[in-house]
Amino acid sequence: VTATNSTSPACEDERTTILYMGANKYDQDWTEAMEENMDSQIIRRPDFAGGGITDEEREQKVAHSELWIQRAFRTEPADPQLLEEAIKGIYRAANLAEPRVILAPSPFVMAMAGGIAGMWWYLSENNLLNEQKRQSVSPAATRAATYAAAKAATAAATAAAAATDAATRAATYAATHAATDFETRTEIFTPYADFETNAAASAATRGATYAATRDAIRNATYAATDAATYAATHAAIYAATGVVTKAATPSWLALAASFVGKRWAKAGLQSAIRWDNAYQGGNMRVSDDCFLTAARDILGLKLAPHAVYDYWEQAKINGGFRWMHPKFCLVSDFPEILRVNARRQPHAEFGPSHRWRDGWSIWHINGVKVEQWMAESHPDDMDGRRVLQIENVDQRRECIRRMGMGRIISQLEPTVLDTERREVGGEYRLLAVDMNHGEPWRFLQMVNQSTGAAHIEAVPRECETVRHALNWRASQNINEEWFPTILS
Amino acid sequence: MAGKKLQQPIEGQYQQGDVILQRVRAIPDGAERVNGATLAEGEGHHIHRFAVASDVELYVKDGVRFAHVKKDTTIEHVTPDGQPGEHKPITLPAGAYQFGQVMEYDYLAEMARRIVD
Image (cartoon, rainbow over all chains, first blue to last red; front, side):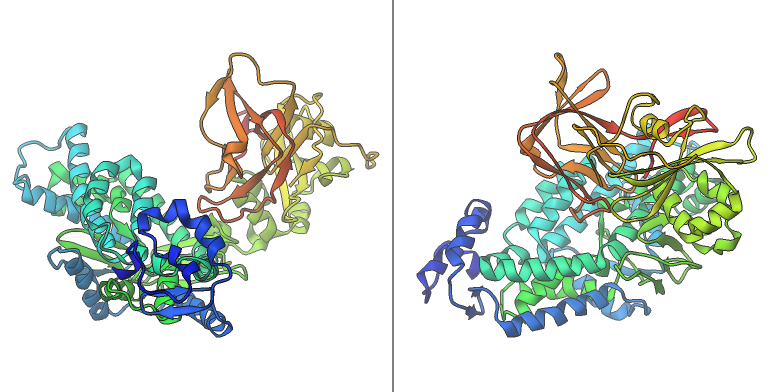
């Protein structure tokens, strides 16, 4: 890759020579390169872009970012043919055999089917599929099997990413998911380190151009999409597969057994929770791709790795989360509903924030994952006492916000025991509320000093004043004064 | 039941969301050094942390946590990816601090419990 050679081609401006450093010198020379390049003239070549960006490019990048944001929020059905071509291209680029590509109706189905299918392939390849002498296997054997099954998928996913996407992304992925199989993935990844797109694109655009383009485009796209797409979906899959695999209900075990037999049914389910060893985010994680394609489409870079990157890009555009396995690739369809608030946080009232075509849904209010009743109940029908017993304070706050303090007060008819206004912290009220559960409970009503949202938190009955309540919250001692100089 | 006269804040006390910090004279003898710069992490995975890890050293003794803040520094509330959370950053002067989290009362369990967010 020309752009990553340490010896530069002829260069119009000597100060930009330093930008032609090898990828492995990136960290140590980055600051120096930024400073050196501040005054460089605009340079555009197929193998290099330097000197900052022009006004015209600045306008283009806004539209480019919006294009990727729209791709992240796609809700029409995915096109299986486009997806299959892209996925097979990724596998070919990674020197892997073309897999069977299956469009799953939701990320949840992707994870469950991927887990069970991965176990089936592991058992099949190790001649264990028909071994049904006992009803079940030991926990240790289950763990070993799920680990081995996940390892194969992890290898495929890592190789595919390394061959077509970023070394930095894959390394970060491995490092942040180290609990599973860090060493193996690192070894697998290493041979592909020189053959990928991101390092080349980064090296070629390093300096002021890199900073202006990458920061603006990547961060803007990330901020606009990640919470509502990747973060929300990732958390939901994780929670849903965790519930299924830990509970291992008879119906789920029966489903798994229908594929891998009774003996390995539990291992099949437990493989599902390893979905995040082998997944890629598809159209729900696009900020880095927005930058990579901006470098290509706006700055005009034409780099050798772009040929295989195209497959990666098309897979991003045409599908959601995917489970990569040597034998198959399960790709989630786009959701049919994806609702956000003005801050592009996942948000919907009276319905799910996300719903896929098989009905799998998740609910959010202002970015907080909530239960269905919290989002869909009409505020007039919400039970204030139930709301005050919600354990998660973020969910409780959003339900209080939905109901409104007026509705809460009118429904619960609290007795106001004390009020206090503080220079730092604002207005506080100590409330006594009949919760239909013995003596009235006491709550401290306050305002979040950063957001203005109302909070209500329970305090013990020994608290007779706001001061007592604030002291107790900090030290569980009503007489130990707590009055911070700064509160945010 | 009338509102009380405005009080003055107490020097050395700081709070960001459910994280509280109280200045102390020194880190107690025998406190064990712990890695990291995170003060608290919620179930929603928002993190209260020192923005510059090298500005602080964290310690624990008998379950009580302490921070030696080497120079004025910032506490931020962020997502795991570093995006801003709901609580604004606060600046903490150099010094030794004891820190923890506010509690609320669980009437059903009849005991204090840590705030879940």
